[in-house]
Length: 99
Ligand SMILES: [Zn+2]
Image 1 (cartoon, rainbow, N blue to C red):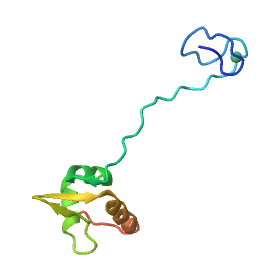
Image 2 (cartoon, protein in one colour):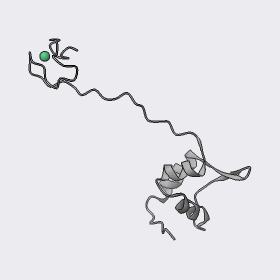
Image 3 (cartoon, protein in one colour):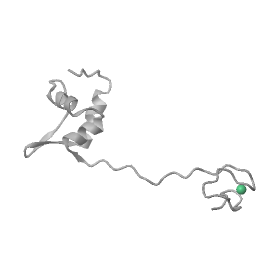
Image 4 (cartoon, helix red, strand yellow):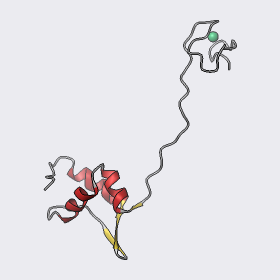
């Protein structure tokens, strides 16, 4: 490892400061990338996207005024991520009762 400023050799791999120029070394950020959100979600994933419980999501599906949009796929419910996000944007000003 070398100092990013003066290229002096650093004593330790994770040295915070360069012994030569004294400058603080940038912290290495882990390369872990956030998982992309799939375009179609299952119930659990939709609840996770909205950061709510599964049971609360079911209540939101049943509410008469602008329910969370979903479509049936076989016997299960599916959610289009775009639609969910649009719903959240539409409803961000409303206080949605947990019911
Ligand atoms: Zn240096």
